[in-house]
Length: 374
Image (cartoon, rainbow, N blue to C red; front, top):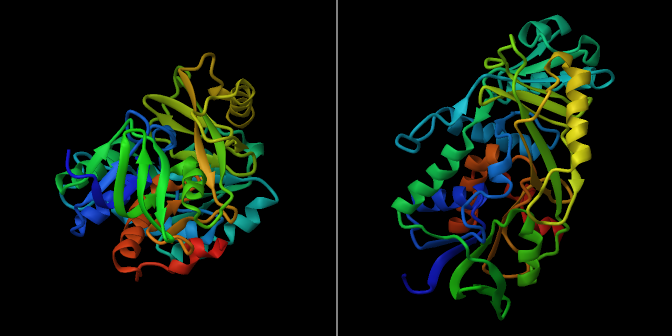
């Protein structure tokens, strides 16, 4: 074990902490320690996500981050990963009245941003996904170049590349307190001892508010929200393998192909305390009911699996990336909601810029700054 002092200590081994460690290491910062309280990285939100790149979002800053990140998935740096990161089977978002006319208005903006977006009629939607009930939507937006992200490959490629450059990663290590001296955060107190650091990065996901409170950082009211997913076999005679991922915004429901079968979610957002999220029986029943209403021929007789993860939002739904305005040495990379995986190449690079240089040319840093909550 090296001396217990590091240039950067990252609290949280999910996609946020992993991506930042990679982009810091890529730029020559090798004195980095990544701490994860579970026995493996990506245990909570990262490992339980549907993992889809969707270049569509009602929050403008989040949409911009998604668009920025997309090319990384389509064309990763040479040698970054061992297999493709993206299966671009497409993402189809459908809308019923009165949402559809408003939704269609965003297509010119998406195209101007470089997104391959196309408006589809009811008939065109049914040609792509014939199992949809026609009366449940009025039109759709097809994002033809988006699709499933191989999150395991992404997470471990970030970590593998960073570790080759010197990153040290410790699992089963919980941060109990932060050391703050004369207004500057200078280390962490773990269940295994004290570790000093020039910077402490809050990449703790659903626990970001807890970690910030330890430092006396700017107070932000984070809300972890549970998202439940079910998986099941496709009915006999139906092959969903080349369908796009389908989301119905009017009914708050999505489904798509997964491991030879299907997954689906009622897009629940029940606020819960940070923890090991577990599915609620009522929400699972709600998911099955929505399958029956929106794609009747797919109703599962039995489930293969069901699981829940946490999506953690700041009050304005935008990310927090940057140095804390109240406590020196404390840096935020939090509040990614349900978009942490698909924005990680952009958010990780922006965070690395701000941590190393105090500024970035990639994005309007003020829109992400934790100082907006001061």
